[in-house]
Length: 581
Image 1 (spheres, rainbow, N blue to C red):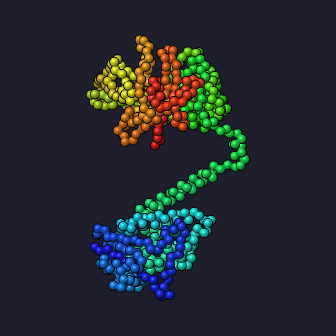
Image 2 (cartoon, rainbow, N blue to C red; image 1 turned 45 degrees about the vertical axis):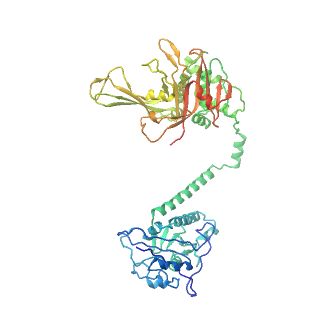
Image 3 (cartoon, helix red, strand yellow; image 1 turned 90 degrees about the vertical axis):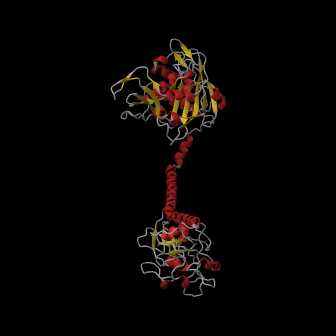
């Protein structure tokens, strides 16, 4: 099947023929040139569709070359193409006929099936080599149309959509897809432009929809509609953002009030140590882990727990709120003495009273318990969900699967997970050593055979079953304890170095470990225990908001590095999820 190529008709000297040159458009228009070229080539024949439709708009001088292509609508031997050469007869069913100076570039004599769906002319255009140019022009025209739709106060902007002949502006006008011409629909100037020049596609200057003058109707195409919808959604998003900014604007009096009663955080905000008030290093490292926890920090700094309004007695949440206020508003760098927190903890938990050394992990569990109890956001109606900051930050789910070897059935139990306590030794082999955090997690989630027989509720037999623990739902902040303290016949501390990464992939240890989605956590806190089991000392390393590591030894704060952190003998590790899906 040959390609049909028709050139633009040359200018005429007949004064009755309206061939005004396209009016110039603003910089946001499609193009400043009326010599845009579109060529459509034939594709494979489709018996259910109309035959290929091809056209080309080109300067007059190039039309002489079209004769060699064997087109039935090609130019005559004198190198020109006029309306008489291009006219073909069609039925009077809404298509152009030979008496109305049929527009060039459309091979209408082959006919379009009445049952055809969509517009074959758009289909031909988007399957031609000129596809990219056509899509680019349509994007520009849609941007102009949709942006003008909202600029009702700027009348100068509407000159872009004014008809080039009669100046019509208030009714529907069409911007030509192939040249800068604009014509109205009411006086049929857009239709006349399409008939005379041969440009059959127009864009509605109000909505951006495509109109085909060959089909005499608006046409739908998935690719073009996607472009229009994307631009429309982008403009809607910009309007919403603009409205939200206006909603946030405050009056001059309110702005002055805010300035007079606000304090600019010091550059070292949050970077401060705690005074040791008598074996309180276990308390200092846990408080530092909360201060450098982004989720906990943002919650308290947003005023979720206001100590000035709380009426609870011995409220540990109020004491934590006071510490955050002091650390992020005071410019001092000297150690802070948490006397109120210490006395409140003594009154709440009698076992903490005195000056004996306490376990940092046990104090972490205690303080999280108290923050949950004193939270106003906790839910009492839903047993599976709690809206307090503790559960939103640290709570996950741990799944236990007990599998019967006889019937292969599994008993599934799901429990809340606040932290992971990982063994550093294999109980079955005293000589085995665990050298990395990943090995600890693999041992924790690997199946193990239970020593006692289990009565299976499915097959009603007593079997030696296997049990496997996996993480069903990961928390935002993952707290990990490495069990360095052994309390058997003789208390002992494991001082072996266990390596841990700065970024931890928890995907292999989840219930759905084969998922393509990865769960990457970043390290932000390490708590270390130095010395013997009963006479030791706690220090910690924390990463601040700028990504720098600092070592906290009670009131002493020193700059550290990732290399030094990774060399430490960690007791508690704090990881935060890298990306929120």
